[in-house]
Length: 567
Image (cartoon, rainbow, N blue to C red; front, top):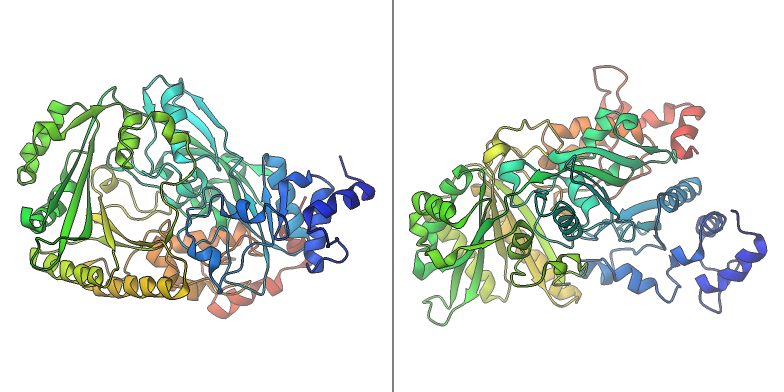
């Protein structure tokens, strides 16, 4: 039901500071029009402007990288809409599109570069539709499927799937329980069961998405190309994904895990060198991760030691696991007491470092740590030699002595990942990759100088690692976004310029993603600093660069009107 003018005038003072009014607001006309449009359809309880008393708490509620909230180079959203329903999302898109406002969707807020809740374009204010309340999970144990709304966290997904299937089903996805399912699945999503079941995106069988048309599209309605794109290509480039239908997997009643530490005095260099050969070739039911961290050690001749944490999950019992590891990796020197049996849901807590907590801890949406951080990623296709690891340790130690700690989180591939073609989903990192490295540094402060120091150190290490990782192109993982690789510039960006960073995330799949983008969002309404640029084809042959960059000017008025804001 539309809200009357008198009602709008009554509720506007609650949206702005007491001394403000709609007419006197400092907001430009498009934002005043957006608010007017919104309030004709939805409750004022869902909308927060930068003048609202609760604005900062809502913005920070799922912002996981604090440096973006204080950065002088980033712009915060002018309006946040906390959507509770599909209708809420539809109206938000409609009103933003109608009045020419940029819109960004946020599910869990774990975007590594904060693109879901800040912008580096100060010339174009924007609206955020926050999906944290849009998080229902509907499990059908008989068909082994679940419809999961985008705002649900992975912890909530794991808990609901396991409990509602009486402990028989799980889902292969990431290890951080506070990550939003929408963003995680749309970027690919890998974790401890990837080697047996593939990525999260590989196990999606349907989806629901809203574009500027206002019509909810499922797999059949959207077509296979768009369905392909939103499973690993970053859904934020194509619309707002409302939900994914997941194909669940059977998990055994008992799984087994271990977590051990080794340092340089315990032959860590040789162990990591061996790990590269062993971990990708283990039985597909075994996941064995290695996390490298420089630590202060007064007993070390360098004052800084290198510590490696080996964490593993096996989809089976203790005796089977002990036998497999003792045969494949005896150098690790594991003892029977290092292995712990548990159910699959408990293993989700174990793998995140919350062993011993009750399973209800997976329902906590608050992250274990909320700090400033910077991350990058690399794929390793050829083993790094023991001598080269020594050089890497030296680089990490030097940074640690400067009070900079950078972790190397290394997760193995192999198993079923070697059998899935690169083009199955936009996530191309399959056969040929031994493992992925995520570089991560965190700091508690938000001061600009301290942030710069950590960012510079991370970039220095990343450059240092160049000879040891994939090349031509040097690959990265899209869910570990890295703005240093490049950005999508302007309202109608050049596909040919974006290829410089896009192919590092998606290899040859980048071109198909851009073609899909050109078909479903030719006006580039859904965009951010690393969104897929639209590429326009009229035949099997691509337009030249100049034609592609100007094609939108040739679209007739009817086409432009349809794609801009259809109802």
